[in-house]
Image (cartoon, rainbow, N blue to C red; front, side):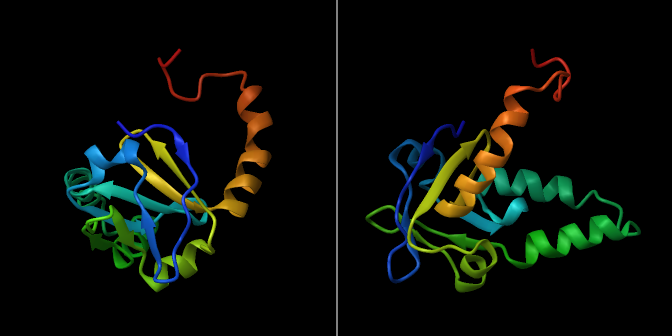
Length: 143
């Protein structure tokens, strides 16, 4: 399970070091793809296969499902960490997420997300108060 938030840097070659906490889950190979809210999703190969299997069940007659499938899969890139535990973020994905030098990598259960640090701070600031004041159960049965 991927948890926590880390602040690595993007190097000049578009590589980022996987945080040590995530290496056991992601060290064997990852798939990086477009996430929602202009971040990138990082899945272990095994988790990506599970998600891909579920996506393939979506009805192709549904336009939203087709659009999601196209955007999610068309940007997917399989990456193997190098000897220094770095993965390369392909240029189109860096552009999609607006990644500059300072990043935030956050664990979100079964996957990680990579954010431009400024975008993450804006997102977190805009959502912290709403999160703190939730009056109803968002995920049934959780609490």
